Length: 209
Image (cartoon, rainbow, N blue to C red; front, top):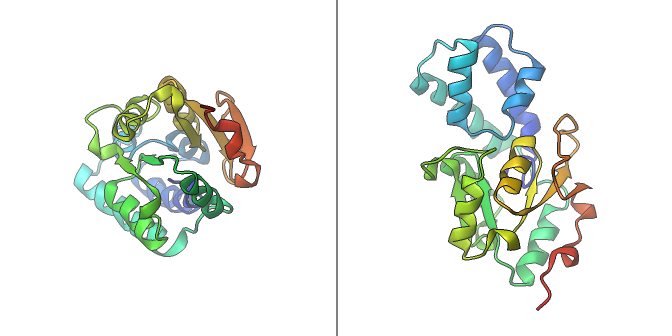
């Protein structure tokens, strides 16, 4: 969702740099890049174990949720070209799943705000699965199972290093998308890298039967 469906990553980056700079010492832009694509629980664990975060998980979650509400309700917009692409995929009767590291409530906010719910047959949040988050493959394997399709028949669009690793580990074809804010993310393991949805070619990935 983040960085693919909505341009939320740039807003998260600014807000988290400010918040994490207050929570832990010596938090840098480079540190910020390492957590992009991780779910909120894994990020908390990293802050606790590697950066000596003092706050409880409850306090941390309240602070992050406040950021999320502002980002998804007021700041984020649909990524350029996404609306046209998802409508074309839906028109072709191709099942679409959303597998996100974001919390379920954050995903629901985005889907409702931009009226996207009808386009997704399956929506999976990292908090739903009792398994490691990205870069582990579990969330994508779970989404494919819920869609009723084989992993090898899935095409994933990802904007982060962790996301690409997750999709590839699941045995799926992965498209890395450059969105103007993720040039620092290593997408080289993707099968293809596109510069925005204007370069997405649906026919290239259709299975001929």
